[in-house]
Length: 241
Image 1 (cartoon, rainbow, N blue to C red):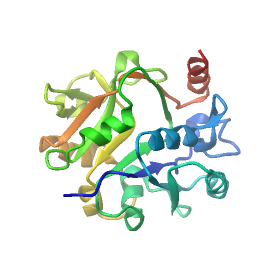
Image 2 (image 1 turned 180 degrees about the vertical axis):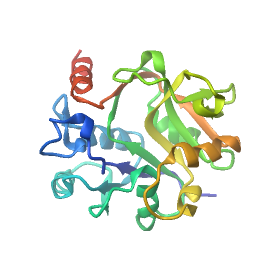
Image 3 (image 1 turned 90 degrees about the vertical axis):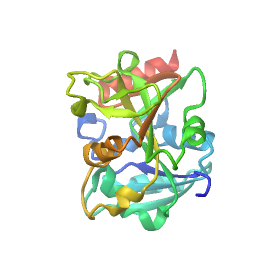
């Protein structure tokens, strides 16, 4: 049996080009929403959900982000995965951090998501429902029609048992659920991929879905994707309301 899922990988190495001019002098992770940096919103959610240790990858404005995070005094405990030489995207960043993460299941979190919970705490629910015997990954999702700051066609279809199919595999123009940037996963398939720059979607998740081992759980609340300055302003207004 694997150890309890208490370690997270926080993906904070992105350039944040769509967030300019807010990212002209800082990484996207340090853009503030309602007085707190995006990375702090996510780390606080992780800590509240039972995560005790997080590995944060660094690239854009790496020194500034590392200094900010070293000044935190609240959980989770932090270590850093250095991608100063080149960003490695989602899959490559996780693979690069393997010596820090270990081989047990982990939580993975982007830093451009904030949300309001109206029901079950999302991170705790992910940790409780993830079953590595049946699942390779369990993704936190939201219905596309309730998302803020998201205008894409959707990412996944989900069956009654929670198994996911990628929209592009289903061959549909739209899908009812969007991935909101947090998931629990067995890292085996990611570690088995050749090193370098690669993403989780579509190759890693596509293979998991084809094997019936990619699952989803729906957020009870409202998700806000903070992808550009207008979305940041809208999320800030929603949180303050």
